[in-house]
Image (cartoon, rainbow, N blue to C red; front, side):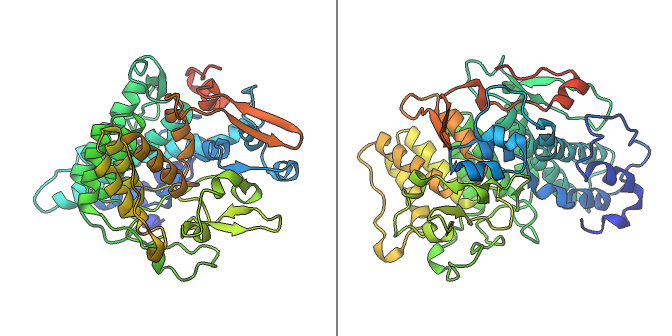
Length: 455
């Protein structure tokens, strides 16, 4: 945390929220006695290390990018992670409440800080001398709140479907800093509309540039908005948000220029391609204990530079993932993801040429230039097939595959039934199975009396 110890007026509040406290949504505490008083106080709150973290560990474990031998499966540290791997039918997962560390508590701890900041801003006058700082702080809080709402929706709610979004259960939408506020689950429609509202306002308030890579800008807000619209199958809106993000940041890292390909982590977290630093809070070691799905790995050709930058060969002849920018899996948005969203949206809007143009801007920097042949397609359907294949390869281990499975399963063409073999046992997850929505930890149900997901 940056200089938080100097903010004496807020130290109790910080100790409460920054540590993903058990007290949030679990015990009542009076945090109104000590309140941040200045814009600098609020800025320090939002500079806490907490805001680099995302959940999504459970859905990363559950997705089909990994495979396990029985020995590797038994090495997984936590019972709930083993349950996620086999898509356990009995939703009483072993030690599921540990998920509160990875998914629930850190999300709502961040949301609570954002609510404190946004509430306090109302009482601080915005004037000519502070308006730039004021807007940046407001936009940062709106961005992080929206990001965590989206993470929670991806994990604990059904896929957005327009016909059922007004009745499907979403997540608790906590918008007030009052710890005693009674929270209930919103609908999926209400959940996504709140995310959209926060991100649109965030994009207006954030600056075009920031002094360092840990702070989000307009490009990052529009990128997350594009991700949100893609998950809603709102392709015109996804295209518009992607275009806006690229207007402010169109830089794509050229993988041809990376020379330290044998390094344990050859990708640079400070690349201008990255909108904001984000890493996965995840107790499990399954990305290194398990192996990358062999069929997926074989999709990377020898001319694909990601084949050497993303993977490490293991003694058993299979590979694990090394393409994170840090020791934890990266979860933030990038220019590459925005180009893939734009390419998919244009393909779905019958713009084959535009789709391939967006895709080839990325591919030119991911394949060996001397051998690169731009992608071509005979139809929109063919273009979409290519885009989705490249999307999976580029966004591997970002905590996004599970949500892609959820949304693509709606289309019979892309719907798949997952299988995973552990020893002599074969486990299956049919398309559109209720298990695509993870169970809410029981302590949250017990304390807040909100409805559990049905299976």
